[in-house]
Amino acid sequence: GELHLAGTADSVWNCARLKVASNVAVVADGGQNVYCVTVDGLTSVESIEGLDNYGVRDVSPINGKICFYLPNGTYEFAVNGAEYAAIVNGAATTANLLTVEYLDWNGEELVETSTANYTFLTADTRVLLAGKTYVVRGEVTNATDGIEVKGTEANPTRLVLCDGAKLKVDGVADKAGIAVGAYGDMTNALIICGQAEGTGALEATGGSQGAGIGGGSGCAGGSVIINGGTVT
Picture 1 (cartoon, rainbow, N blue to C red):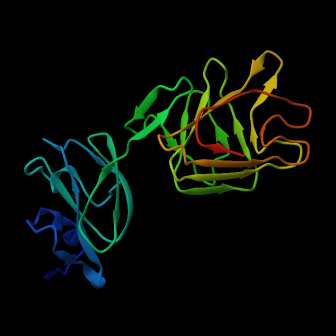
Picture 2: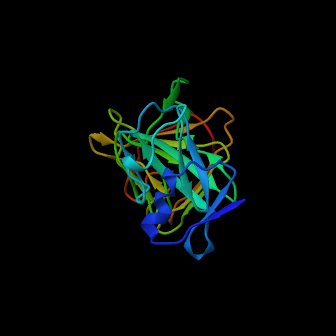
Picture 3: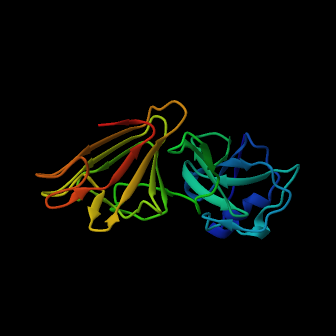
């Protein structure tokens, strides 16, 4: 069945305080359904980030679980500092902890469990900083200015190609698609990592006189280690 609510936006979002079965849609003002998004494994709620309409006072764990009522959409949020993701599509669902598992240059499996430790690469990403890990999920196309890597041999940049992901990068004239250069005594460094199935893909095309990955006009290539995925 459905529960119809009327009133202000605040009163609608405060419906999280109601004990509603997870398979019951709550219809907000304007006929927009919201559905239960469950987060497991909690004994208390100290902080909530990324869901602006919710505060700590709005939810409390019952049997180690809390429930946010959200309309259809894709969400990334944090509870007690841990990052979660959920896709709501007309039914109740459980949020997934955002972990990224990948094989490092030496074959060691690494697990990142917080986006404080990595950044999702988007079409607007232009610079990859030293010592940072960038993760590609789904299909991402950067076809405007290419990407510049700032990592060094002592503090390399990591690029993780998730299974099933595809990253396409095009460089501009005289520059690489993904610029990893060598300048005098400084050599930039990039480690490209994959996941267990190795189905992530990177297609990098340089501009005129530029490599797909590496140097460009008047600039030698730096250090590139490909440890996973398919790179062309």
